[in-house]
Image 1 (cartoon, rainbow over the protein chains, first blue to last red):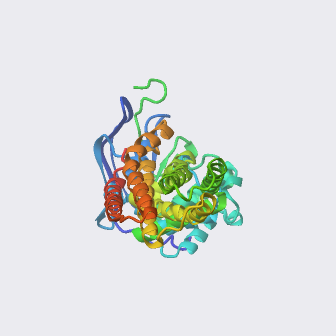
Image 2: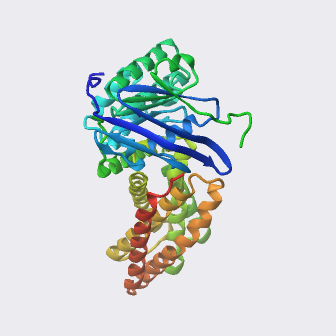
Image 3: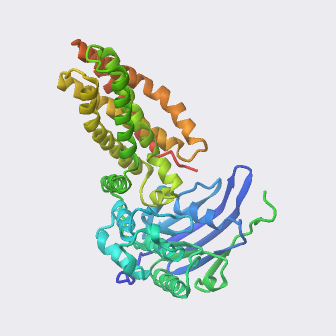
Length: 221
Length: 224
């Protein structure tokens, strides 16, 4: 992308004893970490260890039941409610409006986010994930791999300082995985990338690793 | 730097346009609302004939038809997002208040469109006498704002709960009863040639209270 060289300034993302419970079930055991830009960090741990929960907490969608998080970008501290302005998330839970085309979905997101050149941002994002030939096709007609590429495009639409990728390679072919690798490299050079994964290939895209010690699926709390 | 500065007005406008485009593509709510309005009015007209001299019944019937024609569609403002799994997308790009305000504006437009069809249809099929249009439109507008604000708020509250359908009715009924009572009373008094200032004041106060409560509540709706 043409914006790849634009740095975000000093970036610090930290968690102190972050934990979360869904009722009686412990979804995320206490975890503390500190990360900054440039760089990419892999968040690993067995199924049910809280990788997705941690990303949701960091992006401000979920309030932790214990501990605290800090996100500082360019000297500005972003409270959880404002974090969506500087973060982008691609997760398998993200769905799009099936009656709209890929470009229409992204244009809606760009306009809602207040992106300065929404059509340009949509074009750039679709090019980055190599989905531009299908830009005008309805999402309802997309394969699971194409939807995953659209999730990636959605996450980078506003050129976030912190890019969060939850199982980014799911449903993707080799070309799609190469797109993920390129995005991680691009965004880790200008900001911070968090990759929640258990895929050994995706782990190699990151320089650091946060391993969650969860209970997994075997012994639910 | 990231290119996603917050602009609430732009976000509300974008959500409103998305709602309009989605409705235009699917005709999900409009077709159901118009079908209900036409069939119910036709059925009542065939069963009871024209009720020009029973303006008390006409006033109640008008608001019942408007309420039931639109309520189901408006209750889906947020439910469709949950069932289509698009709520996460919305939450990632806008604040709850921006989302809800966009949906509230859409519900107001939706009600307006239904009323554009319903009012003349009602006059023709039920033989209703022409009301004094200024006061009638004032009652209609204030009732519409209350209906839209109430259904948007309740839809937002129940969207992520189980048993949404039952909850919507259970929560909406006490919220809407004062609106319905004032709107029916005002419409009946209009047709009877009586003053409607007290009904208008009640409708206006209720609309303002609902909008104020909505603005206070929306940002705390989806805090996990």
